[in-house]
Length: 329
Length: 289
Figure (cartoon, rainbow over the protein chains, first blue to last red):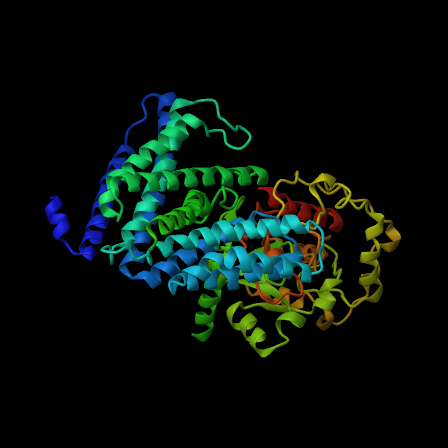
């Protein structure tokens, strides 16, 4: 089996990976579809069971959506993949700005963020100008946005408004732009397989968030920071990190890393992702909303797009820069 | 053909920028003759509500467009007539047009004039007589009312029961003098309704700044009494003023929604002002659904 996989060309290997993922998703979806026909006998128990099933189906739907997005991105090449991630960043930033109060004076800054910063950042990614791409937002944009706001002649809540906008750009544009940037990293002897790196990152981070979510639902521990998140506690967090990192290490054969290296980068990505998820929860709590979708109904159906990608937005830059620094690529 | 293509393109842009989500609470999207009345905060309101309606309703629903804004260039005029299928009104007239034919007036009767000078000025002058509730109830701790997109504001208090205006300045009195119907700003709307179309109107007349709708002009009451069979559907358009504030030309992507509420109707013998206040309350109530 292993011999067979090794004999395939990189493209065929990636295709085989997608085939396996789609196959697994198909089996799980079919099982859930038939489970939904189960009769209700015990009203109390079945009610909660049904609710859990509905929740799981929503999660499954998002997984399908993300996998299909990645598949399209991979099938159509790196440029299309970058455009795709730019669109995701656009929608995520749209959700973020919608739920953060802005004033009339912010209009020009918002135009700058959406129609200048976002395209330039992803253009820098697509053309692999890694030095400029790393500093473009933290240096140039973060100094330009307050200038645009100051020129709008509205001093009230100035720092607060600018911080919100900068934070939105940081998370949604800067963080997200590091995912397609992984496609352009060139490891020696790993040409044409960088799609695996993206898959590896997304898979590991989503696994850690999912495991953490499931464990905290099962165990009902006292939350560590109840004002921010009713579910976050160190036990389920630790279990999530360990499980996802081990899974990541087991998948080290699809990456250019050795077992130990894969374990280390997985831990880094999972810690960054789960902590980022917590940070975005604090922001949501501050706005008094359960999720980033629009009053309960969001772009992806279940809830907001940003709820799904926030962990990724935090994990991607740290993952990217740590492997770039360590492997010197 | 070109109009259809432009329509699709425009729809795509509006959906990309705002989501243009329609939320039907209180009534389903149904092909009956309706008057949708909504709050007015931006010129883009018209585009928003047009984009939020389903395809089948869009073709039989005609938005009302202010002629001075939407028909001042050939391109805008072409888009409003060919794509939106809009009805033009003179804003200078409708803005302050308290046209109020007596409730029992049959549709055929020539409606009283709008350009009745005293009637026009009297309505705004009644404002100070009413308690100004919008500002004083704003929670101070939340910062200035001007912050857009507030979510956790407590529900605004319902508008107070209307203070009975002193009979001297009741605009019905001068409106009794019949004038040629050409001067009636409601005439194009009446024509549209008579031909069986649904219409979208903004009874505030002008765009507000504060987020709280202004008092409704009486055109809605006039239309409601002239066409008692047409269903009156309130609608709240959310967030559009953030997409394109007054004076800006480039829109910013921010999610918007249009919430449609339960239909209301003029009760037997209901007066003009109580009805208009009730209609305004119905629109405001949709903000927090």
